[in-house]
Image (cartoon, rainbow, N blue to C red; front, side, top):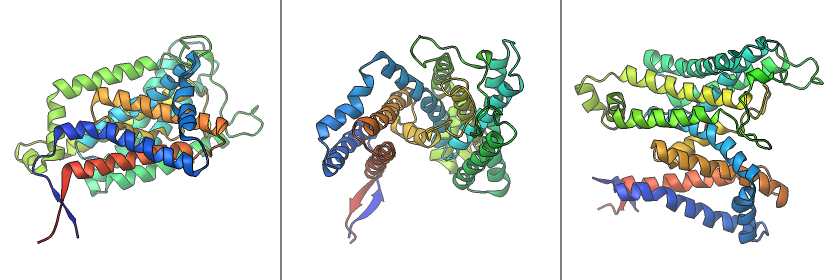
Length: 351
């Protein structure tokens, strides 16, 4: 029987080689899947990965879908480095959308130029609040953050359902669970005609640059990473474990909240039950695929966005079920975790 034992020094080269290897393994497994379903693998991959990018609109959609993934993953990466595992970005995105959308609904008849900035601030606050709650539970009651953040996702969904089905439902919306469409001053400006790309991309760009500088120059980032990899050394140095929890969960919640505002004030344009196709969960894969590095996350975000676009194209052209997107995401995560397991450990035979 073979057992896994930790390696004394995992390979840094293999750590960075693991994502490309996981992508190749995903493509091989995907080709077998298409073949088993009676589809031509090469033709299917063309539909999945090439056809969505054959037009300017497709490239715009790639950017639209990549931005929230990158925003959320940048925040999650901070906590993951400190071994604080926030699984609640989906709920934090929803709460950011609710807080920001609430501002838009309240000032729906206003022409003030400050409505959109107020929405952004409210969305960041809403996401941060939904990260603050598990931080309270973690630091005061030692509640496992993976469970509390995950459960709060469902609470956020129920709150959204209540608000768009009741107090905020559009009276002219034919009884659908949705709010009124936001006014123009509550929407990010579209950058090009015939595209949904809007000025919210500059928020994502700012966050990427800010987190790159934070990781490269900040002593706090160093403390967070030491706390995650060597808790005993961190305590000996006097670094605060409570500060690590608070900062990690609130910041990751804040970036997810910004992503939520970017959706409702951008391509969605209102509050409804389809704000996110699972960006909060997919961003976890993006963070790990990008090796928790600001630039790596950008590349991983575009790949995950392409998988979303490819899944939609496969549904139309190949008559594949909607689950095809999740299947490719799951395979990518499975192969990445498998590669990481053998980077950190090696097989040995028991004596």
